[in-house]
Length: 185
Image (cartoon, rainbow, N blue to C red; front, side, top):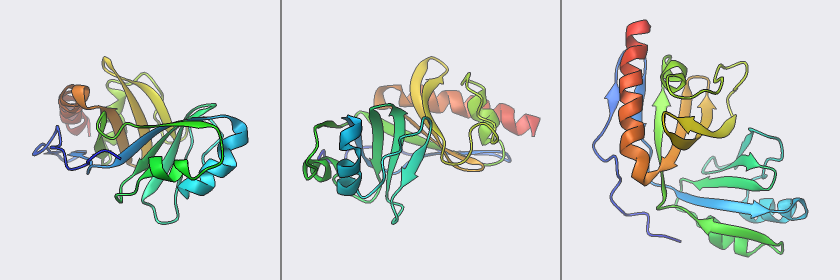
């Protein structure tokens, strides 16, 4: 598992207005997981979270510290916020799979508040309305000019996963969109 003590690329940045708050997420362990359908049960058991099999869905462990986001028929993003080691946990599964630690490649931005949906919609072509994209929904999509994974963690809360190298762009984009959302609110 990679050392998660690395300096956060968005350290010290935060935006808060009357409609939305943007905050860099705390460091987390991240795993890109690929597996065939016959390995899902064993990997779910090893990870302590049921790997979702339905498109655009997620699952969270009982402790709330580990989540699995469906990205494709055989692909998940696993996020552990409690210092766990999902790569080592996958190693316990007796199932053919690929588990790659992407903890240092990715970072995340938390977008919260009544203007969160409008802020993200300024740069994402996907319909993020609550009726179409409910709490727990997730999707690999684009924000402006970059690929991101958007996970709706609550009615007015999202987690935007992006590559570290694009995080300043993502934050700047969301900061400008958040200002527009505050004016519109």
